[in-house]
Image (cartoon, rainbow over all chains, first blue to last red):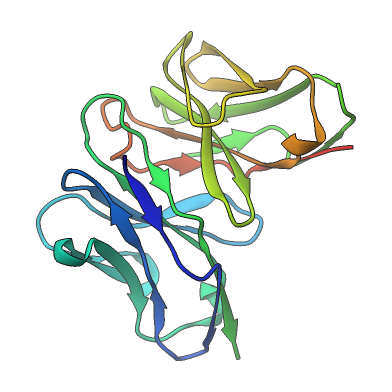
Length: 115
Length: 115
């Protein structure tokens, strides 16, 4: 069964520093991978997704993620953190576009940006 | 602007009460979902619906039921609320055929407290 691991429920980063959020997945087939972001008092919104093709995916607000099949990882990065990046970030995986397959979400990373 | 609207942002109910959480989407999406979000547990799928009057159990359906009488509206029902159902509830929708691979559009959430 598909699953997602996000380590470190809370992540602190200094303003201007690299943001790195780790996501590892388990899947029996090549997966579809997603990062969602939840700003305070809001629902989730899609940050970026990998389906097929180029393994480096660019998303909104300067974020990007790289799919590494050999490491079963889909880590999220942003070169320079901004105060507005303070939010909760969720990695998610879906094994197949066919049939009754749903997203499996990780437990989330709460990002705090320190001025 | 596309939208998923949840009727109540905050609710306080007593143990044993029947609770209705309403969700409406204006994107003509076939698929609608109810998730529960708890700190440290991420998002867990309660129920989803892929068509009017159709529903499928998610990962944690116990204690919940759903209703989808119209395409745009998906209701979550707690027949007899209990304190362990205190949580944030998120409604989401996406297009037919995309299941877990398509972008999910989320509402802002309904925070339920059961006393």
